[in-house]
Image 1 (tube, helix red, strand yellow):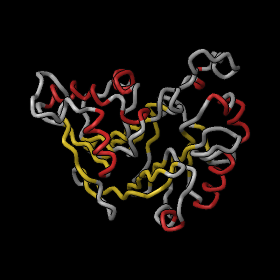
Image 2 (spheres, one colour; image 1 turned 30 degrees about the vertical axis):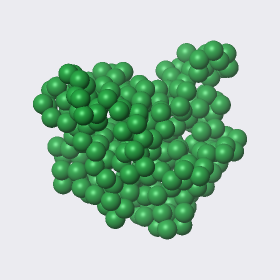
Image 3 (cartoon, rainbow, N blue to C red; image 1 turned 180 degrees about the vertical axis):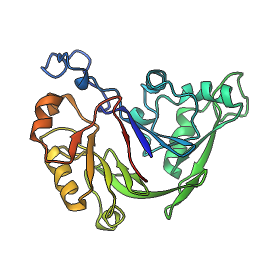
Image 4 (cartoon, rainbow, N blue to C red; image 1 turned 60 degrees about the vertical axis):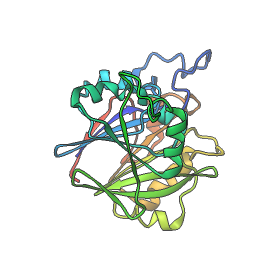
Length: 255
């Protein structure tokens, strides 16, 4: 299995428009963060988790030539705003792209991209095939994916587990029954917005507490804001086996 962090920033990205803080003015490329998204490759299956406003830029940067499906954690703009650009993959494959999401997210997509689902199909529009996420698990080209219910303030969103790997972003609360699905993972990606507590995201301390509880072999922090501080300085504070992810980071491991 191979994962690539396409983006590791918050909804505003880093640097933030019109911000003059030290992080936003940093020359370190590790402090330049596009909106959060992850590419996963297993055998001959290529999956994308979320397609935010930087989708096009991320696909070009990583030279992605094919996508088998896009899996959406939830419907916030920083996770779905790039879907119009799936047109390029439609053209290359001559087929609609499979998008997996829960019913509420599908309704948001039909509203946000009404022209995609209208009776009159304008030439060249994106083609999306909406697929439901089954709570007990679903399959993409033979790859078994287990959804994990977490909460983004009051909004229920999904994290996902594939074998020994789990990916969770945009959460500040994980129910005990969902934690049970995380035990045994060797590689965990979890969000931490900043060091201070936040209403809808884990703080760094809360993320580290979860990592300690789940005890993976390796953990990566994503969905990081400019308020977290410099990548280099925060990295020195982290326990062994835990890293701040950064845009373009690629990791390979056994499923």
